Image (cartoon, rainbow, N blue to C red):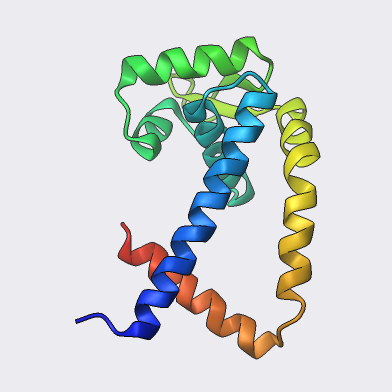
Length: 145
C-alpha cells in the first residue's frame, strides 16, 4: 500500500511532469516543431553533453520509433538546420548526428529562463539537501524505466 507521503510526492511529480510537457509543447508550437522533434533535440543535446556520439540507430531506440520514422525525423531536423549528418571518423560507414549551434541557441533562448528559475529554487537548499533530491530523482527515473 502506498503511504500518504508517497502519494503526495507522486502527485507533485505528476504536476512537474505536466508543467514540463506544457513548456515543451509551447516551445514546439513557437518554433513550428512537433513533439517528437523536440524530444529528439533534447535527447541529442543530452547525448552531446554526455560526450557520446548519437547515431540514427541510437535516436530510434531512444525515442522508441522505427527506422523509417527516424529517417523522416532526422530529415526534418536537417532541413531546419538543427542537426547535421556526418560520417564517423573511425568507421566511415557509420552516420553521426550532430546538433547545430542554431539548435543550441534556439533551445537556450526558450529554456534558459526556465532553467534559471529552477536553479534559483535549488539554491534555496543546502548541498546535502540537494544530494538527497538528486538521489531521489535518479531513483524515480530508474523506477520509470
